[in-house]
Image: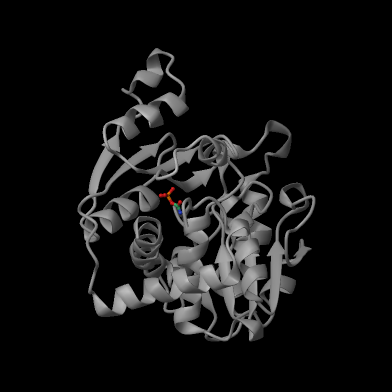
Length: 296
Ligand code: CP
């Protein structure tokens, strides 16, 4: 694997291998070392989970890490990102973990990358968040391994969510039994990659094995698509009452960051069915598996 760009460019075998390797690293705590390699973190959008877990993952693999402060880099003087990457490559950095608000920017950089350069997509606009999909599926497989028998509901702003987009791809690649995408009309996707779309939360939750709530992304909503948060909450928030429609042992997931009291109630986010913090923990191991596959 030279780059890690999107789930759709990976085979089911590659995806399963990353998940299994993530679980192996988590359980064995035996880590290979890649001390000759350096990773640069270039985050043009804010991040807590993705950035810090890539940083920890890299250090666990004995990689050197350069956290590039993009606000003070020479891009502020007009340098284009491709030149920033080439400049860092000339200093000996081979792996670039990039988050950006522009869709497909990592794919464009990968097209012009040197042969031994690795571009990692840490989230691009509304398009893809592939490492999130690997850690999400790792968290599900850890507890409910027979994916073909699962009903999974994803609830929220499906239209603007790169998490939902990559999650649909991974569900399709790994043959998840039933995927239901629950969203108000205004945030429903024009076409779903996989699964069916409904505006009924009860329909989505009914008998679900896994419920994933999405963050209401105020920063990505166009003016004409703004929805009143109180009415969103009334119809789509995951409350203790709504969760009763799902199976008793349904997993509650959220990619974070959480808007408590908007898309999910604290009683649910912090409740016994929640695996939200396990997702965060698994993020480190999933990202170790990704970096290892690139550096090996
Ligand atoms: N889930 C996720 O991408 O979180 P961050 O924005 O904190 O990285």
